[in-house]
Length: 184
Image (tube, rainbow, N blue to C red; front, side, top):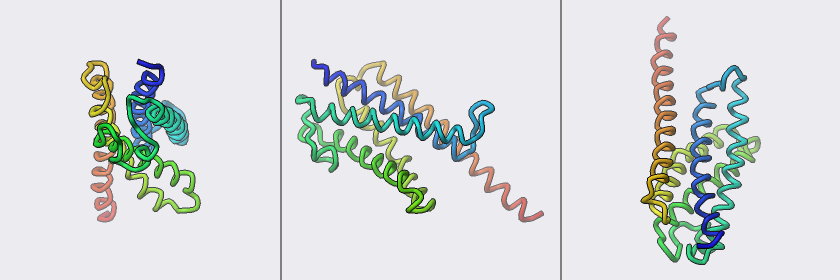
């Protein structure tokens, strides 16, 4: 095993954990959740900062995958899903998730120019991007059957489920409150 192989594995797991935190913080920001007594904009700031860190680790992960001769991931396979030489389905899912992350980053950088509505529509792809990344994690690599990776992935899934449940519950409550106010 080479150093690049270890780097690829480690950066992939760190990317998944960071993307999980980003998704949870994004939901928390939308729900106007505060961290401690800090103003709500602090949650959004942490969300942006960890998003940037996640992108850095994702870039390291993809670069290491291209550099690792065992992985057999060519440059084209990092942009166009399902063209990988080895394990095209699982590499393709990683590529699809990467492409969605790239769209999220690009629209976030262009938010002022494209408007909040377009930005929000693209940001909804985070709900697709994350499970695709989880599938990539569980379907590819030498650690997929290990207890530690399954536990880490299970913890990520539990966090996102909890955040999504909170988001859905908040929307349901909001929908019930609107007619009650209108009736008054």
